[in-house]
Structures are given as C-alpha cells and as structure tokens.
Length: 452
Image (cartoon, rainbow, N blue to C red):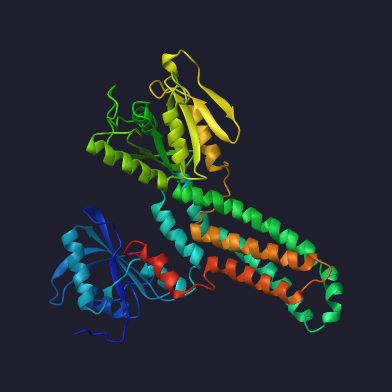
C-alpha cells in the first residue's frame, strides 16, 4: 500500500544504462523526506554529501554510498530533491529504484525533472531546452553554446526585445483614447526610430540564433553522382577511416553509408550513396531509390564528377531531378590522374572545386566551401537555438515589419500598429515559455532523457 497517497514524488535512474563505477538515483517531490527516513534511517543534512546505507523494508542493506539532499525551494526542480550515489550495477540500481517505488514514488517521465524546474520558475523554457542540448552536444562548440543558453544569455536577449516592445505598446495604447493626437504621438515617441532599432536588435539575435541552430543540428550532406566517380573515396577521406569499400568496379555501393564529422565545431553528417544510373540489377535499383530518399532529406549535396570527362548528359539529368532550392557543391574529382592542382572555380552562385579524394588534394578548399554554404561565421557569442526559436524570431520580425508599414503612410492606423506590436511580443515571449501551450511543453520534454 502506498504510504504517501497524496504525494506526487518522482524517481528515476539518472545515469546511463550499463555498468559503471557510480550509479545515481534522483527523487523529487513532497514525499522525499519520508522516503529518505525510511530508506536511510535519517534525513541527511541539506547540501552536504553524507555516507549512508540504503536499506529495504526489513533493514537489509541494498547498497552503500553518498547521499545529497536539497530542500525546497533551493533545488534543481524547486521541490524536495534527494540523490542516491551508489554503485553502478544495473541490478543494485534497480533494487534501489524498486524500493523507492515501494515507498510511494512513481517513475519519472522523460524530462519530468526539468519540466518541474520550468513550472517552478527555476528555468525558463529556452534554458530548459538548453539542458537537453548540452547533454546531446556533439562538438565542443555546441556544448559551449548550449551552456551560454543554459546560463540565460539567449533569454536575456529575448527579454530585452520584449521589454522594448512592452514600453512602446504602453505609449501607443495610452494614446488610443486621443485619436487627434496620433500624429503628434508618433513623432514625439519616435515610433519609427524605435522600430528601426528593434529591427536591428532582432536581426542580431536572429543571426546568433541561426549560428546556434547550425551548431545544434549540423548539416545533412549527401554525396551523389554516377557510379565510380569517387564518392566512397571521399567519404573515407572525410571520415579519416575506411568506412566504404572502394573498387574500380562501378556500382559497388548499394546502400547509404553515414559518417559524422565536424569542421570548426559544425557537425556534418556525410552520407555516401549508390551511384545514379539506369540499373538492371534489382539490388542496385533499391540502392538508387534510397539515394533519392536521402537527397530529399539533405541540406546540401556534393555532386562528384570525373575530372577526365567533366559534366556529362547523365550528370545534367541528375541535376534536373534535384529538388528546387537544394544547395550543392560540384566537385571535379580525380585531378591526380590529370596532374592538376586543386582549385576553386567561379560558378556564379554555386561552388565548384577541383579535388582528389584519393590523395586528399583540395580537402581544405572543400571544408571551407562547406562552411561557406552553411553560412558559418567563427564567433564566440553564439547561443544554442532550435527550429522553433528561429520560427518565433522570424514571426516577430514579420510583425515588426507590419507595424512599420502601419505607421509609414500618411494616415497611420494606431490600433493596427498596437496589434502588430502585441503579436511580435507574443511571438518572442513564446521562446522563453511565457505563452506556451501544454501540448508544446509535452513535445519538448518528451524528447529528454529519463532522469533529467
């Protein structure tokens, strides 16, 4: 029988599955003091590591380790929090977990500890998302940027914009009762000038967030071209390992091979694919179909050509089938067979390079071209961002532009001007969670790991 029927205390194993030197179980909720008393025999001193035995209902020792107790509200979740640092045996951890469940806790859902921290105003939503991004960071640059967001840098930038919008809205709405003074108000309040400054500030935040999104998600880069043009050799060269089989026989690659690399902290997910041609072999046909599936999900394609023959009709057919707007870099490969030097060619808005995947000649040119296409600018003031953040920032920018249009004419509409400012404020406030639906919260926190 549950000894704490009115409680809502959660518990989870907070360390990754498997064996290790230490395993951590985390609890949060009002029943923590009672559970600690039953499990440990005493409530540990707040915020001090204490050595305890962890016992079952009969007093039998299940494990021994350090305990950390954080009374509400000075804890991660803002609730009573207890952490048990025992031995990292899956068997022992599950015994301790079962004991906590017997004492009235329930299993935590993914991200529930951080969700409670958000609901208890310990973190705003952008900071809460940064927790998951810090855990998932695949590069040092991404980890540093996620930490900046977790420490509130992104949120502070948003709050500055929102505060400016609120101040301007207060002036506008105070003037709505005096329509004959609208023109005088717009001039006295420098409404156009303030909007221009807001636009500039928002553009800066969008640029920093865009770079952060790149650090967080990286780019999907698909290698395409006819068979035997060197796609697998290029994958091996970029990955620094012999991942793909390379032979003179055309059509060796039958399925998509994937490898993740990083260039200046940007994660690049490189995908080698089956050569594109009219195939008779059934297995090769399936591989080619998968190639087009990967192209449909790509941020960028690298089209490899054999430098000895250049762009052929078959290559033009491939180009004609590519999705509209898909970015690409054209690579003239195998220049080592021609005795040529690596080079970057002027191709209008597109990028074309001469390289050798076999020797590695031109690899630095390719890496720089990938960064150029990604729009990466080396900077230390990037904060991590997600697609929803970019969409909210874009919506805010649209409403600011609409607001400027309302006051730019000879007969400004102050009511519409005020409404656009309100919509811009709501769009930006959605980033930090001030106007966020429960459905969106469910989606965000369900992607966290259990125990965080």
